[in-house]
Amino acid sequence: MVMLAIGACTFAGLSTFQSIYAETRGLSPNVFFLTFTVTTVTLRFSVAGMIGKLPLGRLALTLFVTTLIGIGLLVLNPGSELLYVVATVLFAIGYGLTYSTLNAMVVNLAGERGLSISTASQVFTLAYFRGFVRIPVSRWHINCCLWHRRCHARDGGSGRSQHRNRQKESGFDWHPGLLLPNSRLQVSPLKDCVTLADPTSPFSFLNYLAVHGRLYSFVNRCDATTSRREFTQYFQWVAHQLPQLRFGEEVTDVTRLDEGYRVTTTRDHYHARSVAIGVGVVATIPECAKPWLGEKVYHVASYLDRPQIDIGERVLVVGGGQSGAEVVEHLLGSPGIGKITWVTSRGNLFTRDDSSFINVSYTPSYSQRFHSLPLKKRRTIVDDEKLTSDGISAELSNRIYETIYHRSATGNIDDVIQLLPAVVMKELSPHADGWHALLASHGTCQRPTVVADRVVLATGFEPRPLAFIDRLLASASMEGGLPVVKDDYSVQFEDNAPGQVYLQNRSPVQSGLQSVNLSLVAYRNGRIINSLLRREYYLNVPDRPILGCLGLLPAQETQNAR
Image 1 (cartoon, rainbow, N blue to C red):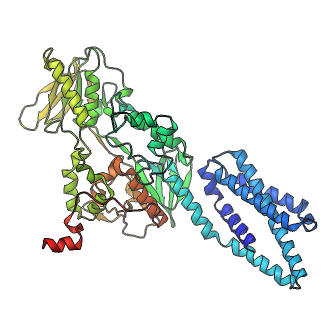
Image 2 (cartoon, rainbow, N blue to C red; image 1 turned 135 degrees about the horizontal axis):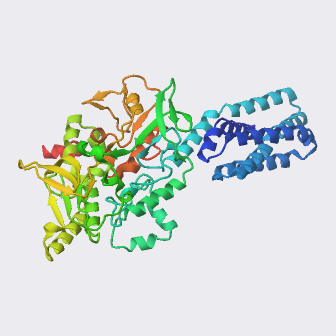
């Protein structure tokens, strides 16, 4: 009876959730249903009648083992259609003949022991249906498995439905126009897709190094970080292993249903229980430059996609952050470069604050404490902590300074580069001798004009505006003009939403700068997955904070202080 109940439960789970299983491996569930049906029908008409003449005990054991082999092959199948068919045939043979075999055994045993054969058959049938209604158990474990596989797909630049990640790009890339030779990752590579949530995951950066035979070489380097190019390759390596990712498929709409959401893409429609929105950012372009965008006026995001700098070319770089600094360093190393003019609205070329105590701001304990504060206080903290994530790395800043210093020792530095802090570009217009940029100083009334052959806009990024997101958030609870985002990154709605909507990289004030930074990407995703599963799949036990807080002091310490 137990064997039959387990078999029926397994079959119910495999049948009901076969479409989900097939989706995760890029297969068609129709293959399973067609193969299973043909195999079982063939067996029932050709073999089932002979079962009573065979040694039933051995036959039952053989069928049970065959069923387990079929299930094992289904679990291990990475996406092979041939293996899918073979596994289904084995499962169909094992499960399809198990019912007839066990039924014959029950009848024989009842006859041998003087029991009612009809009663035994009824109990047998009841056990079958008892197993069949255990669907919720199968569903829970299958969903947990699927979400465990999905949790390792990261970051933050794509629209997501329930078990799939939709990307409109043809493949994974991470700011390809900015992968300059000296571009460095500004955080520890251990802050990868998974490590800080699941240190033993096979999708970690350290495992990537081990698989590619570079782990010891990396450890032996006198540098704790890596290049953005290598980290992009790591991301691509992870993405290649996740069959549920769909590239070249842009999400065009997300609409409410009575239960869940309808996700419309350029290829298909999907029904999702919940939606995680991480559609990335777009370039911020000054108004005066928008009419002239092209080969000679462009955002830094497409820097490497534009024609190379000509000998003697004059270049104006607008923006004093990390991207602007990387471009300036690259230009200083370009042979025959003309004059570089670097302007920033900031009062100086400020470096990113990357000290150990400051980095406490990018830990789960700090994030949880931040989220408990009033919104007005959170807004102030975000302004105060801007340079913890939006500044030039000290290493890069020092390299540029050193280069300019040595150039100044061999000639007039003003002929090579001019640095203009506290300055904004007010107007830009084309002329016969180049682009005329009207600058305005914050501290003085001066409004000089700079002439350049090329203008590179290192003016930052902003959340990608999409109409369907605005419609989706129309009924969100609002505070201070912003949607209320809970500590699991889900939006709080005024009405009964049909499912959760999670915001990725769109809530710096509500959730802190941690929500738009790589440092806590694994933690953020773990929180979302826990919320979806409604249990602590990833343990939410942050490190003991180095920096204390009065409200977090132990009771005894507080009493002693009094």
